[in-house]
Length: 377
Image (cartoon, rainbow, N blue to C red; front, side, top):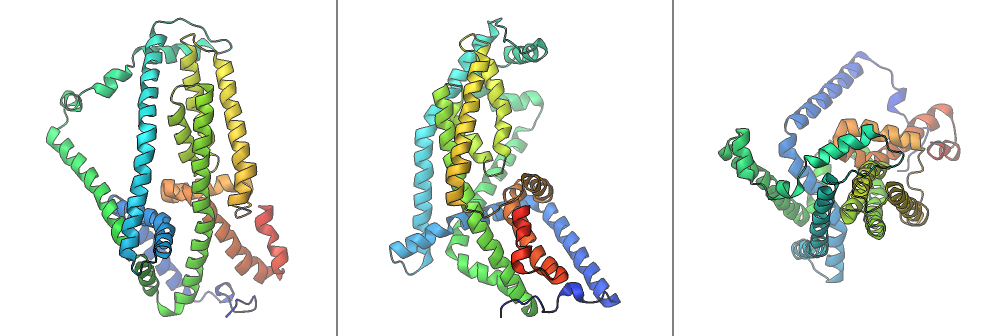
């Protein structure tokens, strides 16, 4: 039955003693659930990570099942895992040698800085001298080839305890992989099972909210992942053309941070540091190289924001930058990195529910009038 703005709302009911007790009990249960989740986050993290991975891979499973006309999900899931594994293997095959080469080049640059007294124009010595002293005391080769066992013994750490810790972390990743396999096998059954956990009288509204969240995440999260991949390619190519050290590494980092709006600009700090260290060898000029990197940012962001985003995302969000930053801060505080990634679709959904259940009902505004709220924000 379609929703009507004249239907009774929980906001219109009087706050009786019984209702207040129910609200307090629900709040106490929510606080208790948050406490238990925080207490068991190390155990639950592999499962939630597996759910996220399975959610991302579900379209591939359905595509394989339809393309190859497979009746069950087992073969389609196994085929999807093989395809994803092959894609990751190809990426590692092409990128790892380049990354190793860039690390070696960076090591030679650091050694060149140790034997150089080049001054950088318009950069105060209060910045250059600490960086030069840090570079003099930093040896990348020793760091990469140092014995982990020796460092453990020098720090007084138990070797047995470290081995156990390493095995536990390995087991967590293995558990995540196992979770992904079983979740993919029974994805639809698990989703149906989660719906059946909700009491019958609340099931329609919970199902509606769940479908809205799924649709919102489908529009935003997968689209944003595609944009992040494109951004990583653009920045890697741009930094490689400029010729800065760790070009591909920094391009991949920018692409990963692109999943969180505006966070890709945080990489301006390490990019500036890399350009400064490179200029201390006398092989390049800091301001010229850093200016070229800024051009890479401007060109790549223009392509992503004005060409790809309208085609991929459309007007799915339409939020003011101040609201975006506020939502990132709030959801990041509540749920950490995952909260920052899913902040925008959840914020947009909450604003949509607010204008539907509160503004439309209380102010008597028409849907077209109240629909302007999200656009204004």
